[in-house]
Image (cartoon, rainbow, N blue to C red; front, side, top):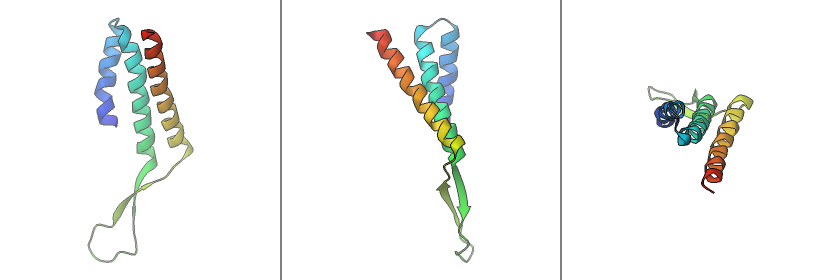
Length: 92
């Protein structure tokens, strides 16, 4: 999510400062995607299963929800919804 939304976020910021009206809405939406990705990165971790014996890789992915991670995700989704609403209001 961060790799996909990072470059378009920078491009939309450049478009916004060059005077493009669409750049404003895109920068809000891509910033929401970046915040959602950061929230997911905060919540994701790896844990080791101590019950597995031998030389195999015993690391497994897990999710740890915290207030910080969930607030980043909620704020990111809110910004993406705001971007869509503002864009539709501009069209109508």
